[in-house]
Image (cartoon, rainbow over all chains, first blue to last red; front, side):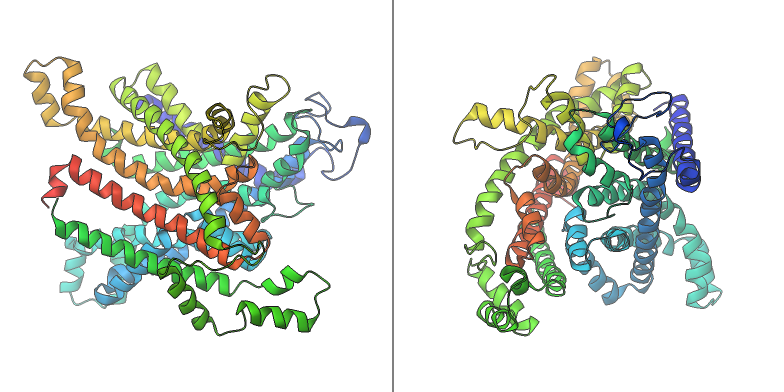
Length: 272
Length: 316
């Protein structure tokens, strides 16, 4: 995309990100109604002055439910990614700096784990851990680990032979100094970019697990669960599923756009 | 392509699948739900549970169960479904072909749509067409399958239009028309996210190629733009496109789990959810192994295709 488009895309991403993070932090305090109280007289309404985004099958205000579900949806993505990136980076840096048979063994195991589609991997682990928010978050983190380890490793490998690292080796620095002070800070860029885009993916998987009944449990207003609970009524009032569905897409899109903008600014070759 | 290259890649695939069998077995072995308890229901006595466990061999040490399982697979025996009392091979086999018909339909449509879209965006770089394709690809890449499916259902299967059935399955053998009308919505759901991803990758590869020296040389020779694109740019951006598509098969195989569940498509994904709910270990293990095998083989196939398309890989 030419510069103007890219700048606009990056700003859109940042805007969505701020909106979504704002909803996640302040949402529950801003909600105009209680998200759980039934108002049978107002059920399945479209948007109005009283209910900006309409109401669900029990007459609950959709905007209030959305705002209350924002933390569990967004922080799920952030938490799962952070755990997966942390674990993956440690494994990748160990493989990349150790080299030799340690590297070979780790890589063969990662190859095997990467052959299992991520969603399938997540489902297997969630079943093993039992459904629920924390379990689902851990499962996504474990499923992300092999991919992140691979990226961290290749990032480390490309830096290991740079002059400043060789210089540190020649100076006789200790290996943990070299890893922590020379290699790691320079390997962080690609890891952060990948992590940002992964948050989008984690939000989508988290919502999918909620939708399948394996993630957040009622009475949570996690957005995937909101779609699942309203599905029966979707032909009578499309708002009940469209509101949480579009909210999930907006959250994921914010992280996708922002991650790509971050990548462009870190790697000028890609911004042509 | 040298024979050595092929053999090396094939050995790598076998090693990968071996790791997969071990990982799957490790995960399913530590599943907390006791399969015997789940089969017998809440009224199963302790003695009945113990008897069923010993009949199914669930009380043996895990490594014996693992070796037994691997030995069976090598002889083409995937064991018996705990829940359905049928051979796993039969249950999974039927589901496999149903899934394959959906996945192939989705993949072919995606390839036919995404590559021209990406090429168009690269050629028309900086125009409104590029912007629209770019926006579409971001929206597509940000919608989980269940959201896309739900929105498609509301608009195309709802009482307003009712163009397509809201779910269900007719096999190709029964009726081509029935299959087609049932496959549209699930295939479109799977296709959206893949089209978004692949077209974006093709666009970026093509842009890179278009700004290379040999394209400038071809233009300076006075070749017409169409010829430059078709003979010089397109062939050189195809190999990366194949690589992207083969990686996206991983997404596709994950996506069918959700999509089949929503549209009641009797494939591997729906069977997997059923098996997970019922802790039907042999079925869970078999499906995971099948999906990983398909993924590994499709990566192998794409490596071969890339080697054919790109001489640099072949002679490396």
